Length: 263
Image (tube, rainbow, N blue to C red):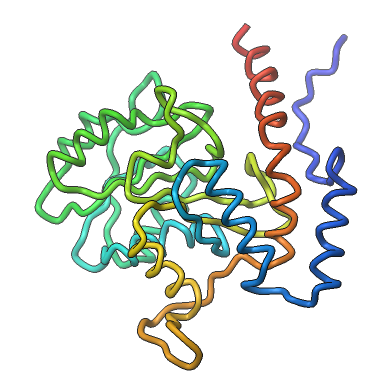
């Protein structure tokens, strides 16, 4: 009888072990561990890979969502429509920003936000929509974009499990004002610790995000906002640089496995 045990994903570096070890060694030898050249290089490379504009590295996917909402001025008194069919962090980020999550129903075929259900919940306090791309299925971004345009709402995409995915031949993370990514070890593109990023084409939003991730600092000893530190460290950035070129092959492997279940 064949073994039908579903095994956990082995997170130990395998095909990329040498590259990961070299990346870590490079950071240690450089002696620069936060907001340095590895982080800057990864931000550039990830922006190119996702076609998302500029990338701002942060400490986690949850922080990526929270800081984006804060940078957009969304907080107390505002509502953000999202899905309950996600990890708690999609909604938790809204609460952490000071706003109120409102849960819309899902499309039964996609298992992601139903645009009609979203529009039915739009009210005077609605400020944004957070679609979550999950299970290999992006949310219906063209339809959600129309809803957002009709009501003047921001779209912040939760791409924490959708690195390099596409919707209607368009990269996810490009339909709204910004997109949030996670690099937790179990994600499609994972580091060896926590990490996250925001991509955006809005230069003013990018500047606010860079300020908020660094304690609200605009320059040395000058802080204009109350904010915690949420920075992607140099070791994780270097590891992600080593792994980013492998992501397409890893994604192809995931698709092969998914096809076996479908067939």
